[in-house]
Image 1 (cartoon, one colour):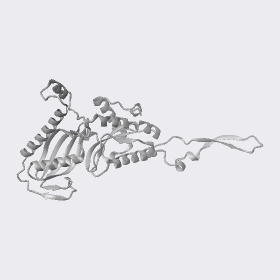
Image 2: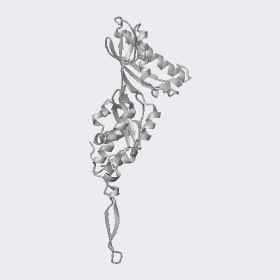
Image 3: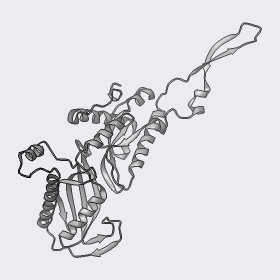
Image 4: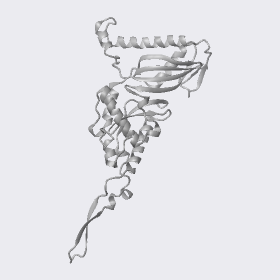
Length: 306
């Protein structure tokens, strides 16, 4: 972990992107608030800058007066308050995660907000593990909704689920090719597809690049999805539609983001590690990962030189 000599050096370093693990049922704004609160607490606990001095002139006016420098108590933290507050930080996230979703979340601090904007506009693919349960449907398609239907699911097998999700993946890929306006057998479309995943022109259109069932133990199952432009309620509806195509009912029990671009769970800080030393170390790790894989350079002030 990174250790700092004083608060000024630590604050100067806090310009970059960090990768944290967002817990479920915690809003993204609360994650942002908690991180900034912890940073303010840890910065104020470090040795701060010296208290400013003021000029004091003492003595009788009819005699030589004494000019001396004394501490300015108006600059003392006990009088003016903590050195670092929430207003000293800027914070934003690259891609939003819903309230009930958990997993990898990229957060930019101070000058790192420019990087999060670039990451957002780059629309990096994200990997999810979507958990579902057969036999029950709700009005919201999520576990906390009101039950509207119950059905049997003994006829559902792993092979049937694999067949349906393969059809879903094929349909999404076919939609992307159609949106390009190019013939499916043309050399131009082949060259375009060989450069990597084709992004939809509409930023609000969810696209699945890969979907497969990685766990099946009736009535529970887990889908592994690679996608872009997705959101949590879209996955809820996807699980519901999967149940309909399997001639039963299903609802989503959880959504976990396990990867965003090159960032995965191994890079994410748990809530107990949202402290200044861990955040500084993670920021330096993310900077190296961005420069090596994506080519986005962090601000000079965020480079580890302390």
